[in-house]
Image (cartoon, rainbow, N blue to C red; front, side):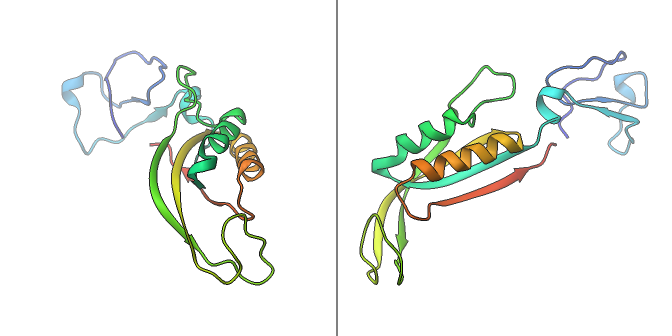
Amino acid sequence: MLLTSIRRTPKISALTRCVLPFSAPHQFQAQSSFTRLYVSSTLMDQDRFKLIFFAPLSHVEACKDAVFDAGAGQYPQGKYSKVCFQSPGTGQFLPGGGANPNIGKVGALEFVEEMRVEVLCMGRTTMQEAVKALIKAHPYEEPGYEVYKLENV
């Protein structure tokens, strides 16, 4: 846990704050146990998820716009929106029998220049809506994406 300040009187802030079992900052010891842990509702009351998806370069902006419109990419205090990280790479896939590939042919290994995009989703509903929007905007029959639940520390 990152302890940003030690105060005698409890104050709720946007940062994680601890009420410590001592009265003066100089009494702090690494082995101390905390009597209570207070966290701001704007940061810790909601579940947070990381949505990571892969899209061909031709559709990256459309996919990002779709997940942003669904509420992803918003930071908790509302000062930043449309936040993501992206990095280029090469994806590969082999369409099997019964597939209807948007790119490539059934039975032929395909390599595609793609972008990996990572975006924060505040709350389970936002994450679910962002995934639905991504699937709708993505050109692939089965888009590549991952969802991770984040820990509050």
